[in-house]
Image 1 (cartoon, rainbow, N blue to C red):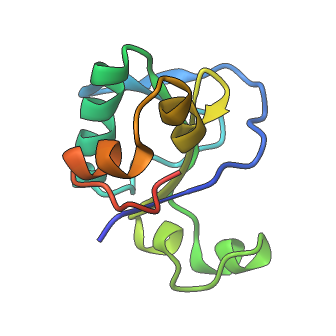
Image 2 (cartoon, helix red, strand yellow; image 1 turned 90 degrees about the horizontal axis):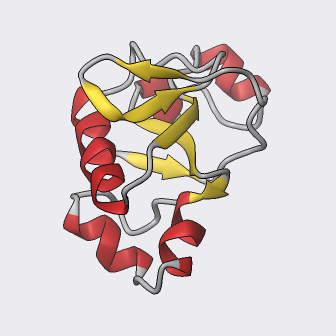
Length: 117
């Protein structure tokens, strides 16, 4: 199962397109190369419907690094199935709710867990 965790503040550095996913952007320090392609495809589809790109500012993390920043050695980031992301600088669930949509139903539509944020 894929997870999307609540974001920390993005670094504000330039963001780049992710090849093959036109509605996703990667933050300057985000490792998206090792993120599950199924998760990226689901996030890309969700961003297309929202009409705004999703910025992934934290993707894959080395297990030791993930543990050092508040995760744990085998957390979703360390397995490549977790990202921290925003839409227009706002946490994804908050952004979806602000558009009058139910975040749980919206994420379920794209096969993302109800805890996606």
